[in-house]
Length: 274
Image 1 (cartoon, rainbow, N blue to C red):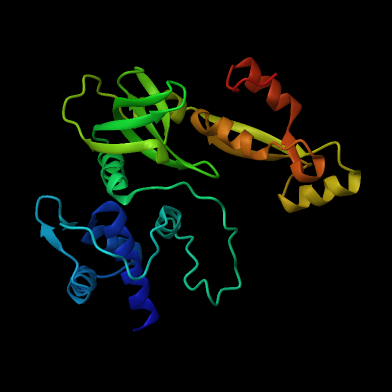
Image 2 (image 1 turned 60 degrees about the vertical axis):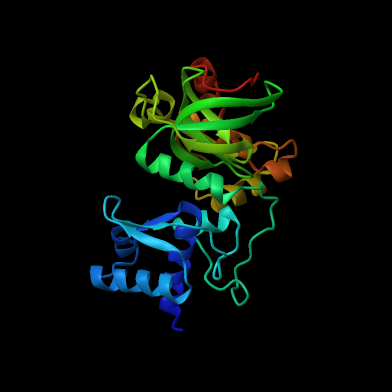
């Protein structure tokens, strides 16, 4: 098998396994293929590995009918996310790039498929959620719009009908997810004010470090005048700040610019920070 074909099959398998469907047009655009070539690779993969998937005219996609055991990919959602995000290392066994074995949270593809589809379509889900705050399982009606990788976990940004606002749901704590067609609130991604509101985080070398160390850190992060501007949105701001925090200056290396901190605090955009 040629490397290109293996790359295509790896992608097809990942999308079918996690999303439960794959559109010819999406695959075609991803790899800049002609439509006949894209369709040929899709049908070849399905036939060669006897995957139970059929073409759905209304969805314009090959839809998975029954689960299958993947050949090219592991069952790690992070691998899928990296592959879709074009960051996947093709051959890890011979690669000169290594990734830390971080403790990934358990994610179930059967639960992920309706969630991924709902994000793409901005449709409504009925979920069973393990809430630490409420001390038990709760049922929520949500309209999700984005999956977020915040470091060691994925969370789902969604409008929650019970909370009457947009909230973050830890993906590994969703025990079930099914389509729901009755939702009173018509709230979509464009209505998520915290998501739409851009904010700039200014970072700088930790002043507790020596002058030389600060120069090294500034060079590492390509800072201009010992400062770096990171653009994000209000919904993601505190997750980003959390990644940067560490009590040791040698490990911390970078901190928020004091002026930036005061502005964010004055606008009440920080979580419980003095």
